Image (cartoon, rainbow, N blue to C red; front, side, top):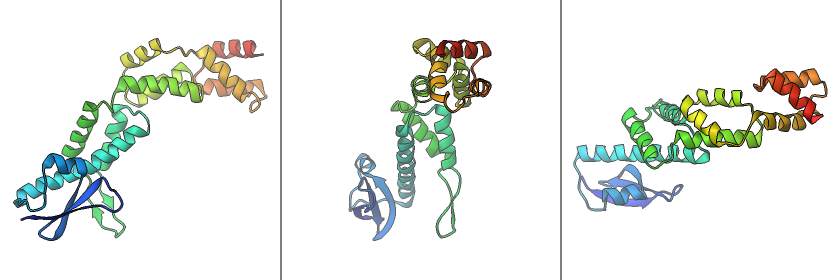
Length: 211
């Protein structure tokens, strides 16, 4: 069986369609095309073509996972959960149920992302602690609970808090200033702050200092 054409995709210029014996067989990204040395005129047997189709699927899943990682840092657990969803069957517009990616492919994708340093729980934890403090203001207790839910272990969490300049006293003051008009009743404001994970003594001290 012979590669008869290689043409760029209309919607994604970074991928090409590969035809075998005049019929579309699979697509690859341009880097895969170069790495695999695929050219018009080369011949492959069926087993080799099936291997290339697996590489096609790997490229698609890797591209999607890379986009996911570049949106913002994610923990290793978040990426594993994302890749697990890629193994689930998907219903096409025609109603046909298409199989998801194989576990071997999602494992390869995860390992590649780790190798390229797109997955790093230490960097993710530092990002999460600093970003949550800047955007909303959060108690240390709440941040720790969020990080545990994302699969981060205590050693990494403790290391991140040792390096950060954030502290609950300053965080709660930011929130009080921001939310005071929304919660003019002090008891309701205290209840709101408690739901964010701040302790009673910290709340009372911060309210007195802000006043």
